Structure formats: structure tokens, C-alpha cells
Image (tube, rainbow, N blue to C red; front, side):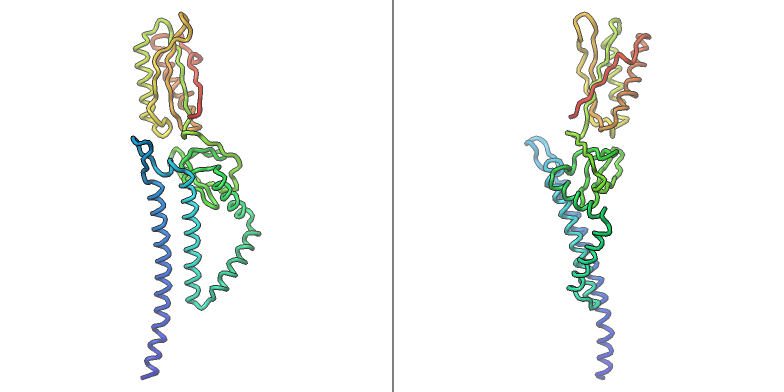
Length: 284
């Protein structure tokens, strides 16, 4: 009887150990998911901006949002690291040995993979030097996008197509920051003397409005018309249109809009030329 009970306990004990391992792994996984969900909630929560409007934590306090993302990355690593250690303990591996070997292996990997170490160092530098902030639009190398995440190894941008672009931190050499997340394009359209100014002004604003509805990801807000102005008394008049553009997308004004306006004015004045339209740019 005693032998049978011992045999049963010896069979149950490994099963309980396996169950415990599964519980630890599942608990670690769902804990990490909960932390990430909570961090996303914090980053998207609306905050009273000036009593009349609300904005997200990311846009109102970009540095706080940046710190939250790096803390989530660090806590995620710590949870998984400890969970692996607890699992190994169930296989009779000493936690002291595990932590010691992890340190030695980490040093070896650090010396062997210098790029990894560079990513870590530059990532920390970006975070604490205020070089990048979550939510702002920047140019990193050839990529332009809104900063979505700053990690110890990668920084993530969301471009105008909604693509997530992961850039190794060591590849970040030059950072271009766009205040307000856009550039302003001022288009001055010279109007011939004999043209029906009210009619052509309405037609040009219709072209600008149509382009806005067609290219929402590039033209970030409805174009603004400033009305017909006089450059010099008795010489010529012009219509000014302002566009807010995604950085790096000036061709839509320089080519598409400009050509459409030239063709519209040529219906009333065949001699109208593209040089009579000028475009200037300013950062928001």
C-alpha cells in the first residue's frame, strides 16, 4: 500500500510541476499584455488643453509619453526574464546560476555584437536628451513620419501611408524636426488684368478643395484662400492659397495643383504661363 501511494505521488509531482510552468508562462504573458494595454490607454487619454479643446497625452506631454514607452519596454523585459528564471527553477536550475550566466552571456554578446550595444546607448541618449518625442513628425535619414515609439533598439515612425517603419537607433545620424507636424505652402497666383477675377477665384478654390478631399494624407487641412490682393497699384493682382502639407510632399503643389490652375486660367487667357504662379514654404 505504501509503495503504491509513493508511486502515485511521484507521478503527480511532475504533472504539478508542468502545470506550474504553464501557469507561470501564461501569467507572464497576460501581465505583459495588460501593461501594454494600460500604457496605450495612458497615451491616448484625452486631456483638457485650454478649456475649449482636448488633446491626447502624447501630443500634450510628448516627453512623458516617451518615458512611458521606455518603462513599458524595460518592465516587459524584466517580467519575461524573471518568468524564465522561475521556469528554470522548476527544472532544478539555481536562480543564482541563471542570473550569473545571463550576466556573463550578456557581456559576451555585448562585445560580440557592437551594433546591439550602439542601439542601446543611442536609444537612451535619444530618450533623455529630448532629441525625439512621441507624436512629433521628424525626418530620420530618408524616412519622414510621426514618432510612434522610441525603444532601446529601434525607433518607430508612422509615415503618411500608415506604414510602421522600424529604424535601428545606430542608423540615426541626423534628425529633422517639423514644428506642428507640417509645412505651409503659400501659392501666389498672378491674375491677368482682363480676367473675371471672381469666377477664376471660385474655380481655383474648387480645385484646391477637390485636391484636399482626394489627398487627405498629404494635404492635412482644408486649403485657405486669402482673397485677391494687389501687388502694386495699377500693375497686377494675385490670389494666395495656403496649404498645410505632410513634409516632403511638395510635388502635389509644385506640379499637380500648379498645372491644374494654369490650365483653368488658360481657358480665359491663352498666354498664361506657369512662371506666373510662385510657391513659398514655411515651417508651421
